[in-house]
Length: 289
Image (tube, rainbow, N blue to C red; front, side, top):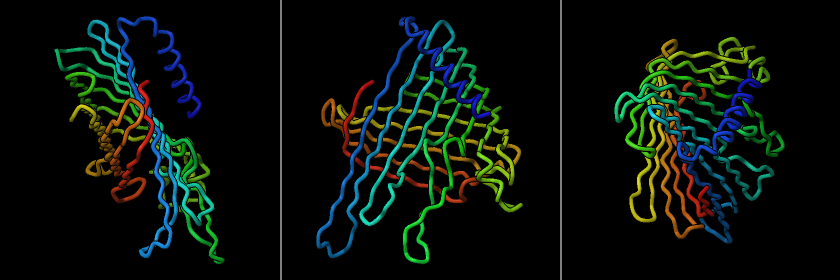
């Protein structure tokens, strides 16, 4: 199944490449930034450890519009590493690769029938960090590329004011979770790995999804972007709604230098029964794509 997913993504990319000549129907936009953080301490009474981190962010969107057919596809990449003095390991601060594609057939000026495709995974291994009996730092692998990976489809309605403000509602939305059996074969009978049961490599859910996007210019050099994803599984605890929300404040110093503040909230009780919170602030190099 994972090879089918990769081939599907590759074919999608080739399709975009073949249609780039139809410029009257295509509009493309995106940006990339490399954020840098560094802290150093010397005789600092309250304590602290020297650390350095880098975070790469990029998103690129293809907008297609012809007659009553709008089609938007976005590629998202977010990857970060940090190194702290005294630790032998580089540790991930973020790791996300995501594709979202929304095809519509217009009903009115703002509303369309819609078909949604989404794919999300991580690039590299994730670890739990601890110490052994000797006090040495050790790590245990807890995730990997395509473990987990999420493949989601949806049928419903979309509302779109413009490219920077839209919402899609999919009351019919199957979601497929892929994992490597390496992570499930040693589970106990009552344990799961991201919802996948012992000895299995996948889990099928069927539910409803809502996805929304808003990008606003607050001031001349400051923009605020929000992405929201909600999912309820009809087949298992539909009241436990999965949440994926990211807010990004972009502050442009000049055409190449920017400051970014990111707040990322995730709730998925198949991963952990608590709200996951990530906050990143950095100064970086920014590029329009």
